[in-house]
Image (cartoon, rainbow, N blue to C red):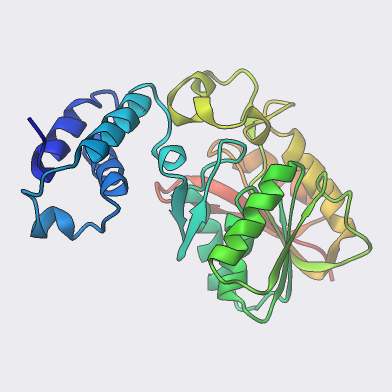
Length: 278
């Protein structure tokens, strides 16, 4: 017997007992199959799914049961005020990373030349380009497919003041200087047990894992960034919630000033900043 929208929602959430967000997952997948906005859940709860819609819904539920992230199933993920295309060769943008944008907006200065290292979907670069339309923003990533995806997201969100290039961190950059260098680099320890759990099982290990107990890329960026920062420029890096003290200590050791950390949505120290001496 064909399912109505209300029945399909209940059925879908029941099929996802291992998801902490089963009801939301089912809702997002169903709306994707219906190609409709959330209003339809309230205005037409008795609307019957077509055979094609029900088949697509069941197929997506099956993939979600196996742990595949909803963002990959839908091909999109919201970040800041943007809607971003996502793909399995990039990390899925997360709400905690928006905390870095909040921090930048709280500062008294307006960055004019911004670099986003390991840009992935382009989330940080595009959000900052959106918020600072007078700024020139560059995003780089080692993975060619990520660069192409970031360029696609630039077009989708009609952002003009951002460019994306393939680069191994700073390698493809000339003698440019930036007043803000921002990054969400790999920072998870290779032996972290959480790598075999949840959505991260489907995300690229190269964007998650770093050597030296997760600090290798953070320290490399902190060391190399000084060549590319203007006097008084800021380095801002996301990291694991237990890594703030070590990252702060390294920045201080490297000569950065006004070093500190900021909190994520759960109140944990999620990012650290430091300013290049004037």
